[in-house]
Length: 193
Ligand code: SAM
Image (cartoon, rainbow, N blue to C red):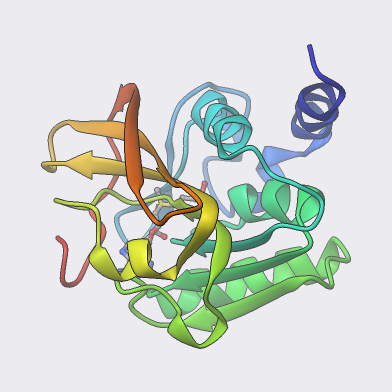
């Protein structure tokens, strides 16, 4: 196992998932998505780890995350990247995640309360993009905001079943997409629902 992978696994196992939950804390150790209110969920932990490893973070990565949710995935991204820009459309989740990640001492996360289905153009391009809600197709805006040599993880499909895809933009701007897994995420609201 590579050093970076081992470091991510170690941090992941140290991170207290119940800290990111206001209710159902007794389910924190289950390898399941758990409700966090507003019909949203904190993602299944094994999937959070799989997606983080597949994103192949570098210490100088500038990362865009769509769907802050509880902030659990955000913490993993912020620990192993230079800067994280995270967007959440539900006000209460946005504020709770911001408070929690502030309490953990992260100073490299920028938060935005908005519809992130079209990305966060002002800070583009991003070396890495993590989408934690399912889009019907890969949003063109996110492809445009991905840097050359960049990688994106995104669940794509209907509300019942989706393909988790690794999308890579090569140095010539050509897009390559690889199927990683079959998953079921809440929908990415907005233009690509
Ligand atoms: N990784 C997060 C976690 O473990 O807490 C996942 C949270 S949940 C599966 C997906 C999140 O995406 C929800 O909080 C939802 O409100 C948010 N979301 C859905 N559509 C969005 C959009 N268009 N813009 C921003 N956030 C969105």
